[in-house]
Image 1 (cartoon, rainbow, N blue to C red):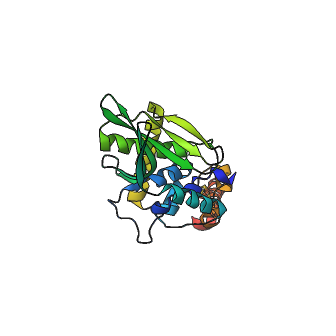
Image 2: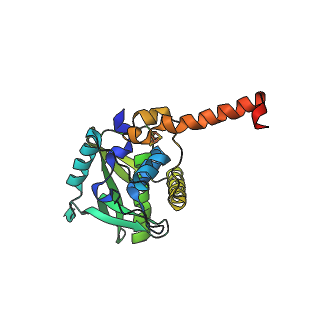
Image 3: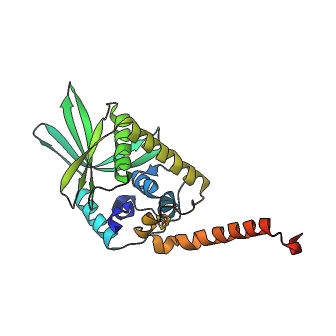
Length: 235
Ligand code: SF4
């Protein structure tokens, strides 16, 4: 299913610029969902600036354009802020939240991020990690614990409540660290071993995972052959 590719949900204002990444530049929140799906995909988009537009990405853009209008309004005691810029110095991440709902509890406002996604809930945790990273930013910015958020899927038109439990926080922090390492090294990782992800990936034509893997496999085969039948000519 192509809809499983988080590449289709890239936010318009977080599309990588053509200018290249600065080493100190914060990691875009949208890059984290790509990194969970495939670290190579995140590097191709955010490091190498490769981008492949297709019907799914175009739909994703339209959804985010609709959600990306900044504004605030109060409804039944809840302050709802759209297109809210977020950042965390601790994790060196930044981006824009589609919607954050602030509810008054014990004299302070507790933030609750809501992220809009095309399609329906996925089998992988890419969307959850992006949402949890928003929670980490909000905790640092407001100094209020953020215990969860919600993903709203266009296809099901329902909110999926996501608790920010220890497991999800750990996965989010691990993803941030892995991506920071890739950006610091400026080396694009090899293709994922999960073939189903490549089949659903809108970057498959540009990434050419088979072409990248083939030389590595051929090299390994040559090494094994040489070990079994040493080549006299190279002695
Ligand atoms: S084609 Fe496969 S390896 Fe390449 S970016 Fe997509 S998921 Fe990753």
